[in-house]
Amino acid sequence: MTTYKNITKPGSSYLVPHTSKARREEGDGEVESIHISNNSVNDATVSVYLEDTVNVSPLYFVKNIVIPTKVAFILDNNVSFSITRYTLKVSTEDVNPDLTVIVKKK
Image (cartoon, rainbow, N blue to C red; front, side):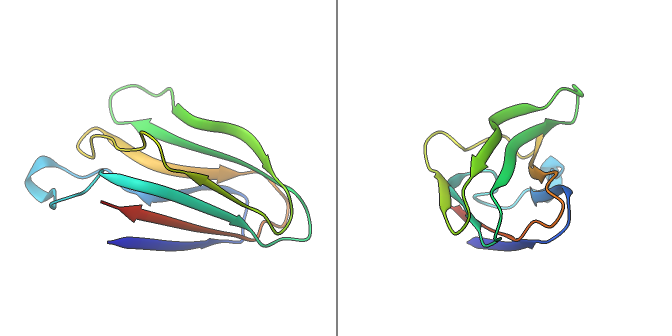
């Protein structure tokens, strides 16, 4: 299963939301890759992280990485996580972001 998300406003966005054990679907949290494309005319500063349901501190895959204009960044190593404990999020504080995020699940 693949999820697509366009981001055109600053702030954080859910990529894979947390769910209870009772509602967990097969393969949730088993992420194969995260593809982030910067479609903007400006460089984009992006963070990808897990938000813990127990602890407030985020766990970053990447923090404040700069993606040049018209370039894609791919995370494809060790990005799986427990969906019953974490939420996968992406954030940018750019004024006019134009990002396409593709989350490919195993």
